[in-house]
Length: 116
Length: 113
Image 1: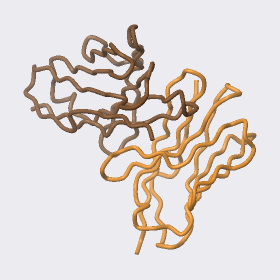
Image 2: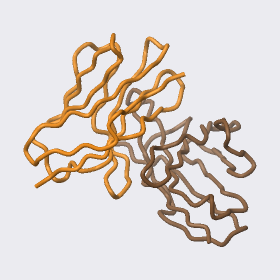
Image 3: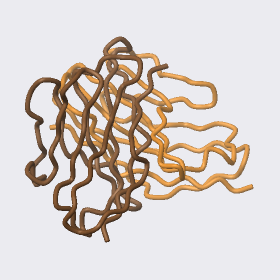
Image 4: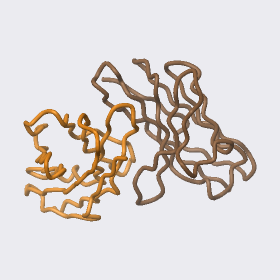
C-alpha cells in the first residue's frame, strides 16, 4: 500500500534555531499534503494544507512566517519551524492523499520536536 | 464547516468482549467520507475503517464494523472480540471534497486482560 515517509522521527534543538521536517510520498504522487500538530493526550490539529507548486494554506492562528511550508515536488513537502521556542515543542504529523485510492489519506510516522 | 464529536474521552473493555465507540458529525456536504483511525503508543496513525456517505451498507473490516446512521449523523465503531493490541487512542474523522480531514477529540480505549 501507499507509504508516507517522515523524517526525522525526533529532533532536539536549541531555542532560536530552525528545524526542517520532511514528508515524502514514496510510491504515489501527492498534489496535496497536510501538516498536523498534536499535543500530549490531544487530537490532531490541522496547521496547514500544502499544495504542490503553490503557497500553503494556513489555518487560523498558525503563523506562516513561523511554520514555513514548501511543496516543491509531487512527492515532497517540508515544514520548517523557524526560530524555534520551547512552546513549539510538539509532535508534528504529515499526511498525503493518494488519489488512486479514492481519497485515502496516509500518515507519516510523525516527528517529536523538543526545543530546549 | 465540518465538525466531529467524540463524547467518550475514555472507554474500557474486557478482552474478548465487544465495545462501541461513539462519534457524531456535522457537515453541509452531501458527499463525504468518514473514518476511524487508531493511534497506538507509537503514535503512528492507522486507518481502521472507512465509510463513503453515499453507501448505505455499513463498512466492515474483520473485527471492526461501523453503525452509520446518516440521518442522525452518527458513525459509531464496534470492536468485536477485543484484543490487548486494540488498546489505543481512536479518532473519528470526516472529509469532503478538497477540505482537510477533521478529527474528533479521540477516545482512549483500554483493554483489560
